[in-house]
Image 1 (cartoon, rainbow, N blue to C red):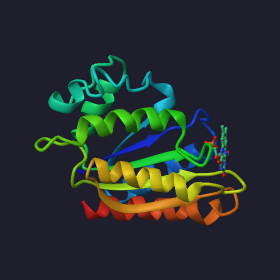
Image 2 (image 1 turned 30 degrees about the vertical axis):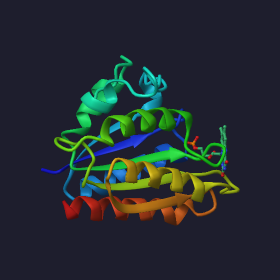
Image 3 (image 1 turned 180 degrees about the horizontal axis):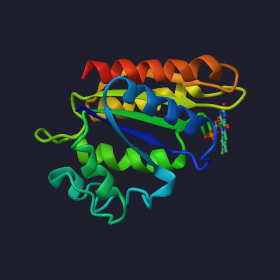
Length: 183
Ligand SMILES: Cc1cc2nc3c(=O)[nH]c(=O)nc-3n(C[C@H](O)[C@H](O)[C@H](O)COP(=O)(O)O)c2cc1C
């Protein structure tokens, strides 16, 4: 059975980001996939240390030498067939926990040619904004850069705001369903 990892990155367990995560999980399961969900805020994932003169073991060994929960989550990505990344929009951008995680994943993945964890695998990105929706496109653009750096295959990019969440939550479920069915 195909496996899809859903990653959320909000401190609120009952907020919009969590609701998006639940729709994604349900949609993927309904589409026939096994899902695993991680909320980055429940894990200890610190910032990239830019080891050495800018690169550490990430460049050659594809392994981050900053020891925390990153290693466990990163290696679990190797068993996945697809990914759904969901962040709240903070300051027109990703949440801090998503930034820290993406920064470290991209360093480990961008130069890896074999046994890559994300390269060629389909990815859905979701940006969950507040009432204004300010910056949700820029947030999705940051996510697109990440997907390009790790050479994922773009399946969908979805912006959700408090004003459109009634139909965008359904869109997320539908997208996750189609993603799972495509695997
Ligand atoms: C520090 C911070 C910055 C935020 N910046 C933005 C923003 O730039 N644009 C926006 O539309 N909403 C912004 N918001 C609102 C959140 O995106 C919104 O409340 C979102 O639903 C949060 O997800 P949650 O429900 O999972 O907490 C911000 C919230 C916080 C806490």
